[in-house]
Length: 357
Image (tube, rainbow, N blue to C red):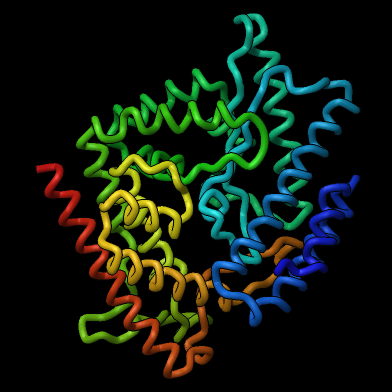
């Protein structure tokens, strides 16, 4: 059953007329979702929370379009799609979330229109990014954001850029390609988003070197479990004794399942949906899929109890969990989940290397 308070907040988000109002609603949503955390399953919580994140982002974009019109910049000159990457693309955002985003827009009618169209979307993207910051979403540390021209361009230029990334074995380009795999439409033209994904999947499996580099990237983060089955904790500084749930559990599993999904040509972006579809296509046995899904739910649950805080008015989270917050039962559950994650990583490595020959 939907929470009536959250439903009311969603309605108010959809009709908010200012960024200040949206920020106030974001704070209310944050408090409400924290209160609901003990009462919902992991999947229910993430579904409801990400629905709110999407609603906030869509309203910010709509207000940015209206601001552009009020400033005499007009309406969007061509259709466009606003995409979320990272945890937003995977619909796995926690209470805190940064901005991983991009814009793909339709091709200008003529070369003369190109500069005008580029200028419009450059200004629109900057307005959106600034407004989202005011709403509590910090920009992506890696500059994967719609206000970066590299992530805001026409569909033809996007296709050329993807071709360039596929033609190079550069580590950073491969990282970008993996980011694109998680891209999800949050606002705008669905067909443009589909074309971008088509361009991505048309080349992926035809480039064995790129797949090899994707595998190397996928294996970069290891499960935080020692050779004797002990949890590997932070050794130094203020966070000594904490466990890096984000990069030592959650991200390694996201990466492993994503690479399996890419090789299968799946368009799903959430990790649990990818596991389900891999099972539906007989690429994962039902038992394995069930174990992986349950393991991932454990990682999702633990991410929700990592420390959330505000910094310069924006919600942030480093993904680390104080060891003191883990009961013996939680530690045992985490260790078992990490062992499953290690087996999954070995499986993905073996399968991918087998395909590459």
